[in-house]
Length: 295
Ligand code: FAD
Ligand code: MG
Image 1 (tube, rainbow, N blue to C red):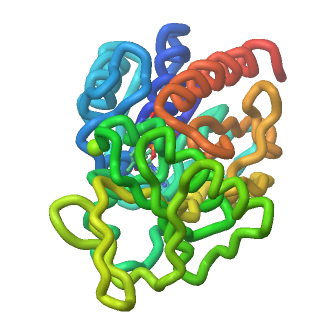
Image 2 (cartoon, rainbow, N blue to C red):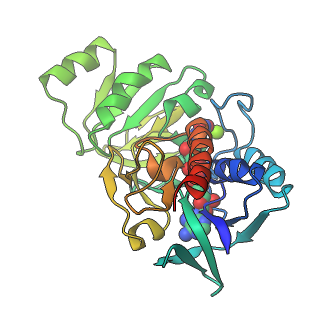
Image 3 (cartoon, protein in one colour):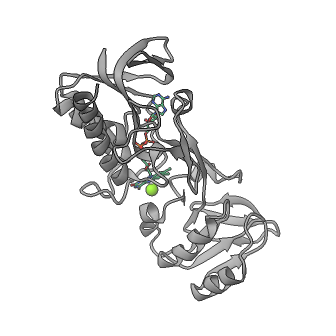
């Protein structure tokens, strides 16, 4: 019996695990190895690691965690989880079963990208969702915003800080009078024509008429969904975020299911690496406290 099983061994999960390992607790991390940012070669905005390869940050953190003798790691998908008395049973895709007194769900989200030819291949390289993560490296643009959700207007109004911006409505978004005024004030170029494809060395946009708008990079608003089925299988309550559902947690990062905690992208409206690491540290501590002070 483990004290805690952590599902998801990336920034949030490993950060949670570190607190528990340092409390000499028995921890199992189950991780499928599909970090959300695996499409990018550089991670930006995380203190002390700015610009480093996202995999290198995660690998070093995992090695530091696994140096603690009470931590085990399985490279597997967790496929189910159930409550069994006061404990939880977790099954992995190879049919193995594990039990723990507490669960931490740090399994992240999956991005559902707009279905435009050429876009998915450039995801994390020239097509992004987060200006703070990748806007600076576009060296002042030109920059495109492809509307995919009502959040598009926020992107369109933000991105002029990173370079001259063209907003592709693509039949998805129609600004109201106030928004047109704001777009004008921010100097945003607006295109009504349908986007046919994203091409070229960077992220040039080809419109229905055949016109090509050369761009250094393109921003869009993917819909996110839970990467793991476990939160739903356990009956966790979700909240509706602007990009998709996330797990509802209380101030101690405990979900609506007692004994099940959640952190990182799976449990915040909009996450990044720094937030995942901070959230994980808080959650690892909270799960540890619950082991001591509750029964
Ligand atoms: P993740 O890193 O997504 O890790 C979740 C882990 O859980 C994965 O390893 C996954 O395989 C595992 N998992 C899921 N389901 C299961 C299961 N059933 N069983 C076992 N394991 C499971 N943020 C920044 O701060 N700076 C950046 O520059 C940046 N660039 C980005 C670029 C791109 C293209 C994208 C999409 C995101 C970027 N982000 C960036 C955001 C960042 O990737 C996330 O905020 C961060 O990865 C969240 O960490 P996490 O630990 O919560 O989830
Ligand atoms: Mg990059």
